[in-house]
Length: 419
Image (cartoon, rainbow, N blue to C red; front, top):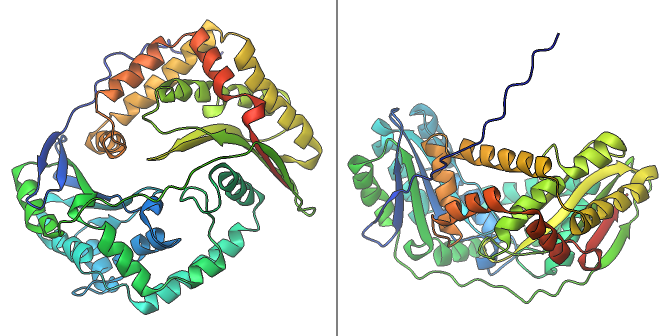
């Protein structure tokens, strides 16, 4: 006999620990989360050097990707070997708006690893050989990606939402990779990797020792103004597109529209609404189209927020015999949210799910640093975290229905079907 399920307890007292803030002598703001008992630190150096700030397509991604491939003092092998030897790690995740240099290190080895980071961030070499290898690999990866219906559908819908010249909308091609030069990378680096375009988030075993090390090494980054974003006007046209790929087993479906960034007053409400529709495993799209109808194995909705804009879409893959039924049910679930109130039990489940996720995000210094980074880099106050919690706890069925009527109407949607 199966034991009874444990009781569901409400998540209470969610509090984001506010960091200590100070500035290095070159003006870089530092957000310090001093938590944890282990002698380990996480240092994330954020540059506003993503797509909106590039002068040439793909310069942002390529510049960030090649930073680890050598500096005036260190070769790529020496950089990799040093981090391996001292038990640290160095990664440079590339996001749409930022390029981040992420370092994990034992506190006692900061003097060994931070000089390398400083040299990378002040004197990168961008070797021609490494650029050639990167371009060749990128072309092969792109060729593979373009054989996948879901990739084609994503590329198509984002291009239709923002436009083919917009930083959030343009797509890579073999020609754009081939057109990149070392001069493009140096130009992007010199313009965007400056103290005026940077912030640092540190967490773990921080304090005065780390502050001194940051000043000594990261304080070397030259001063400079913040970069200006290139953002052409966006005027998406609702439309339906079918890209035929007759040999495909699965057909990719994307239905979405332009929305907004985190600063928009409706963002928090849409965060809840999107979760109800397709943002977690118990969502309406999952329950109807996967569990009840069996048209697809996986279906989801997402609201991606960037620094300057955002978009919403529903994504899934279905057999070609079920495409029409699947798209019909997607629109039907959107309509239900516009016309029928969300039940109290369902809304309570979503509240608990979202608050539980936020609770997980506050577990430990490195997770707290991620939350702080998200809010600070997008120009929000850390008090906006409390506002998000307040929306999750207090949003009612009428507000949800109003948001659905405002943003989930079929007349505003772009539909892309690939298969």
